[in-house]
Length: 112
Length: 112
Image (cartoon, rainbow over all chains, first blue to last red):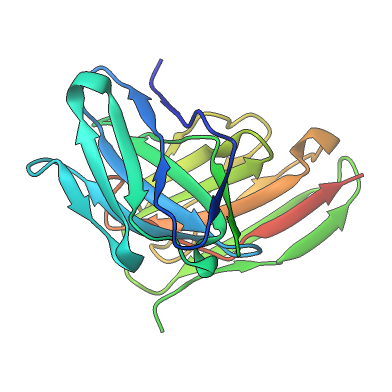
């Protein structure tokens, strides 16, 4: 079955430190891949997306993600985390069948 | 302002009392979808619609109905709500399933 997995439920990083959030996918063919962010009490906002081509994707708010076909991964990174980045992050995939699947989410806490 | 609106934002109801959660978008998007968000499970797709009068089941359609009579509206109907449908519900819209999804603010539903 098609699925998206986020292995880390909760991550804590210090402000200014680098960040990497993991995402793995299981699809028959490479899906379209997305990262969304959800601030407390809010809906989801798109950070970035990957369809094809360059495997390093730049997004908003200084985030980037790298698609690695060999590892079925699409990890999200940020070189220096700000306190305002504290939120829940969701990886998602869509196949040609138009069914979107989300990972369970990773909650990010930023320490001062 | 481009947006997806949902009403109501909060709803407490009792088992078996039919309810409708409305969703409306003003971006002329063809694709609309409903999700429920539960702790540890991320977002799960309930139903989606590729265009007017076209709807399809997502991962968890049981106990829900939808309709798409107009492009801008995509109401979610619970004919006979049960406590296991207590959840946070999000509506989203986009040009297609593989495009950026714009999410509504969410509807928190409690079924007693």
